[in-house]
Length: 403
Image (cartoon, rainbow, N blue to C red):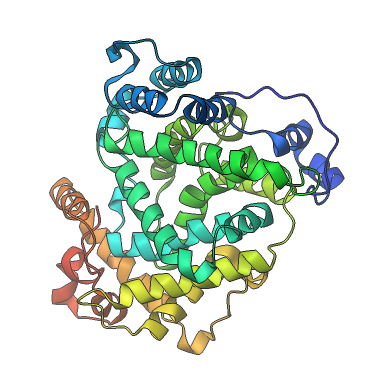
């Protein structure tokens, strides 16, 4: 979907528009127009849900699960328009890709996917002061952190599974519900939101930042623990997540040309030009997120690192993934090189990943185990082992097999 919006004067949220123009040309001005752009289809559906109540909700739920053509009665106009847009699969989508799922993310051991990918994705989202300010208004960061962490992990797992994004499947429905949740947040915040400086809350640019969180940021974080992907895998990753962006209502101009990490970094650089530095809400949300993740993982049977050690490990991952400058802006403490476990963990994970993908049989087994869910064994990932252990790296070095 491509949103159409008239050009507006650059608000104060644009940090340095001239510098962005020099680096990105006309694309910089295009991004500025999206500062106040929402998702017209989803925004209209939320308005209809409020107007028609249960009738509209039932039509939407049935349409999402069974398709627009399955409805006995004509649904409300906006609900019908949204369902029609969702069911018009773009020509560039490979049906086999949808049946296979996000094979790249599924190749990541669930424990590392949670610790690295989910944590970095949410932290990256919180780096936007507009988003952080809105989320901070909904409750205390410490109270909401565990819930948001769990919700993000469940959604991501639903989204990447084989066949998950086919019409009516759990990932498809959950992704559209995320889209409508964003619309609901916009609707409830507009009554008292200053549109001038921060731009529209949870608008196109903030949604693009969240999308980059689950692609670029997630895999930058995974690379810090030795889970690297090849150029071919990058292309598969962004092809799959471009369809996720379509379902989320992200403007085509923000994701259609992003085919790999290089393209994602260009978009990231452009978004950073329109985003002020993280504020106190950003740092509070990030700190609460790290605490919640460390606490949750320390409570999983088989985890031999303490909550404090896990927090230390997460700080190491985020500092390296975001870089020292952005890590400091988010209030992430630096970790002394002498106590950092990442070099050791990285070496072990690279060996594990090699053996997990050594043959089609081992790769298929790794995917099967990942689909069964997480079972973190940090002891195995954080301590060296001998050659006999390396022969079974998928089962031991990473705690769980790669997917």
